Image (cartoon, rainbow over all chains, first blue to last red; front, side):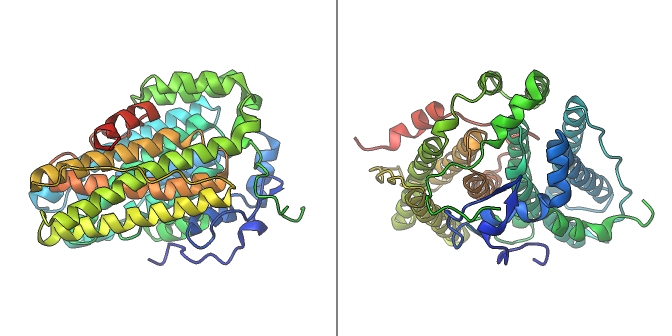
Length: 211
Length: 219
């Protein structure tokens, strides 16, 4: 998929993370994801924010919150389509779970002293069950890659644990949606991690202009 | 920035603990609250108290990652061997047999990656455990597969917060979500909820996981 990165051209030992140069002691070939997480998220801006205070985790949580807004709204809209019983049941369940993610992320951001971002207004190109499942698959796979890409930069191990708990559910959604489409639920042995800018680019077409 | 040192055992910065020391009890309490809201169990409180205690584990962080990697390796060996036994037994057919083959191949790749990672970190990969699985009947095989995969996903989730190296964490996460995909697919095929814990997946601690797999180990 175009929003996923499988062949990063950023050498692992060139990625700067919070003032330290990481060492290339891991398997670049087998574990390509390891090279990815810092490339987009921990750019100069974020590094400055990290250096200035405890903004890092709040930024990441707000990034996650935006994705969960998107997913929750997607299922809310999608459920209005004429769907088969099996797909409708999945849409209802998954939509409810995304809404719970929204609630939890907002609460966490506030407890960390941050301000939850407002939800953008979204527009989904949905016509029928097939287009619903296709976009659902893209959004859930994007969600998995976004969390996997962002999580290693999380400072608080408790926030990390919560993010892990959510990404596992995103991966479960992704697998079932893929099955409902007749696709391989787990096409790769290692899920990819996506940089934040790549994720943002993937979801931008779904955000209404001016929102 | 400095040139990467050739010594692979040099530990990465202990950033998560460092953050917690700076943030103090407020951050820990907030996160513990989130975990409580997520319906997590007593693992949350022990984690929080450990973090508040500070830097005691810093020096042993590389050793800690190696232990976690070898724990994961043991589980991946079991999963790979389970699927190999299932495929050999021929108890599944068609799409189900295909899934067993594909999932088994992914588990084998996890095994290879973990072995290589342990070696790269200067450790010794744990030996492949001898195991035996009941693979006589289709439904029981699918249910055992679902049990094993759900357990595997919970096991990775249980360790994520303890991993010190960002690279090891990224690798573990890329495997964790694949285990979750396997688990959800098998649950779905069995007509069970694909998200049995609801919106927030629960973690399993090492003791629980090892007790659960013990019946399949051959002494």
